[in-house]
Length: 81
Image 1 (cartoon, rainbow, N blue to C red):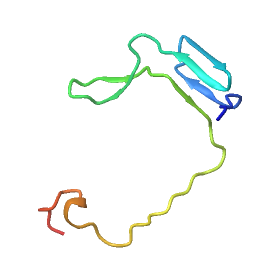
Image 2 (image 1 turned 45 degrees about the vertical axis):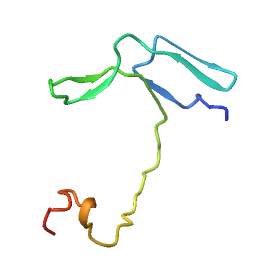
Image 3 (image 1 turned 180 degrees about the vertical axis):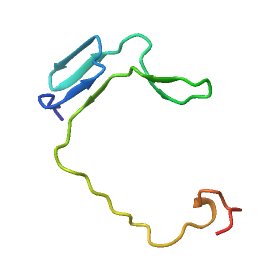
Image 4 (image 1 turned 180 degrees about the horizontal axis):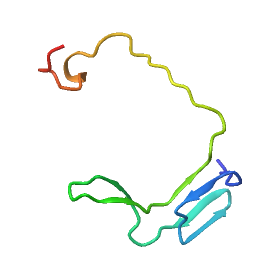
């Protein structure tokens, strides 16, 4: 499926990127990444991210209709309800 890059924007553009035969070809920069609050306190937002801004609001619905039980509860199976 061809990619349309005309309305897309880079956050931290890579050193090299191009559209080739309907595909995106990019070369990553040196030591780029997204890290948030690691054990050592690293916060790094240097990774490359190609995105498109949405002009309309996104809506979500919560489809969960009953309480979580057992292993699905945030505290695990021994967490009291």
